[in-house]
Amino acid sequence: MHDMTLSDLEQIGDDVAVSEATFQMDEDAFRLFYDRTARPVWAYLSRMSGDARLADDLLQEAYYRFLRADVSHESDAHRRNYLFRIATNLVKDHRRRRSDTQTGVAADGEPVDPLDPQSADAANGAVRRLDLARSMARLKPRERDLLWLAYAQGSSHKEIAEALGLKTASIKLLLFRARRRLAGLLRGGER
Amino acid sequence: MIAECVREAEVLEAVAFRRWPEQCGDLAAHVSSCEICADVLEVARALHDDRDRLCREAQPPSAGMVWWRATIRARAEAARTASQPISILQGVAGACFVGAAAGLATVAWQSMHWMDRLGELAVHLESRRADIAAASTLAAGHGLPILVAVACGLVLAPLAIYLTLADD
Image 1 (cartoon, each protein chain N blue to C red):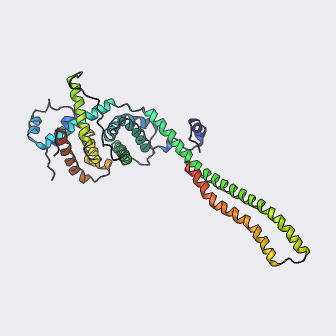
Image 2 (tube, rainbow over the protein chains, first blue to last red; image 1 turned 60 degrees about the vertical axis):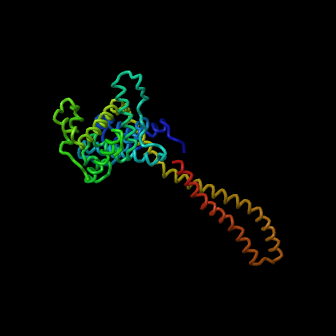
Image 3 (cartoon, rainbow over the protein chains, first blue to last red; image 1 turned 120 degrees about the vertical axis):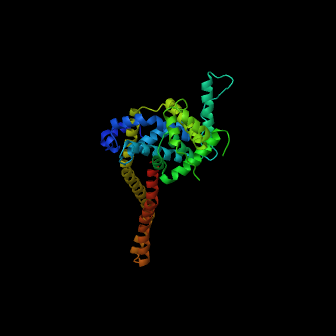
């Protein structure tokens, strides 16, 4: 069997009973939802996977799975949490596939030359980004997920539990430990 | 043990709404003396700034592009699912054809010997010395091609189905 080309698909066209009806929302609703969520989801995928190019692929995959999922959402927040849950699972799958020798999160900042900064702010910002990337790389994957959702995304404990598949009651303790650890790393030492 | 501070939420809010540190005189004084809130501030600021930067730099494809790709992929998956039974039938038909061809080849090969045996049988009949042993030998000669054809089919059918589905 050969791979399908675009012309093959066009020939199949309307004969195949696949259309927008197979997705859980219509195109207009999807556009609105996508425009609101694409950048935060991409940021999450990028930081959690440590790879901006991979984040592009995972973003497409996340929305595809979201559209194909046969799930009814009671609110927009629930819909968004569900999307983050898909994104979290995609990153987990990626981590499993990746060899153990690679680090969790790459320091994706551009090279910084403190002697020749275009501006002090830009240099400081770049250094802070590198510090954060390195510190995040030393955390456990689940700690990274927790901290990002709580402090970058502003999610509640219930939303984090939904996104990560954890019990709501356990979030507070896990978050406390992860936060202490990251704060220590950012200050230059480990607690 | 979890250490908590009642002002954690205020710190988070100040960071989220970009009020820190200019509009947080009282809160800033508290944070300087509260280890918990200092941790919250450190982490929240770093992650919030990182998220803002990543969101600014993000260049996600347009919604229309993502929708279009999803539609194409859904169609391809549906087409693949729809074509799977056809592939199985093609596999079975292919195996049957190979089995039948093998059977015919065996029959053809056997028939050459059979013709010889017919001659021998005629000689036997003519001499009226044909017996039950000769008849059973003849039956065995006919049964072998059928057995070979069935065996070929049994071996090749699963192989053909596997090869057909392996493409998917």
